[in-house]
Image: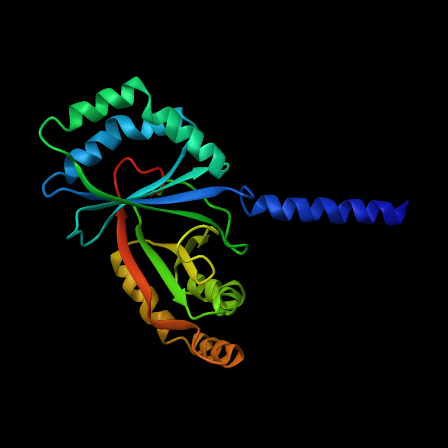
Length: 254
């Protein structure tokens, strides 16, 4: 009886641990809109007044909406979440045929189309990602979207370094680990890409955090040891992309 009870408690612990990560199997979609010149404000108005609520109406979860701090390309970058890819298809089909959306879309392009190009990527949690907290802080934070491209066969080494060391050192220097993702199996970058989101109090805090991180003796040891264990460079040349972002006023995550 005692053994059975211990087994039951162990199973309960594992289930609780899995739940604490967030919703297992949750699908995320990162969408990037390139607005036509002079049309970004109109695009944001359409999202604020119509699109965000219609997404929720059709079962999509609005995670966060951001614009780059330096936005030469008139970008809007946002994240949606769904229970599955199948649910995503069903939601978008219903959204696209919604009379309210058709009316809002038609009205918004009376003076010309708002969007020149759309990019999207489907993501899933890395197993070490913290539970995603979709919240507004007292004052909007400063965010950074980072994408790492690894050499062939090196993603597991990068994941191990983040899970066992990097995230903790980030936190030490005042960075908030928001979420870590990998592209899904049918997506470009699957098997060699890590996408993650960090948050900072403000832009000055971003600079201070990275200055501290890069000179941290512990990080230097970790970086050297992980490279040695991997047998070479983990990332490809110029394998880091970074976009500094600020949340828009209607973003659930701020």
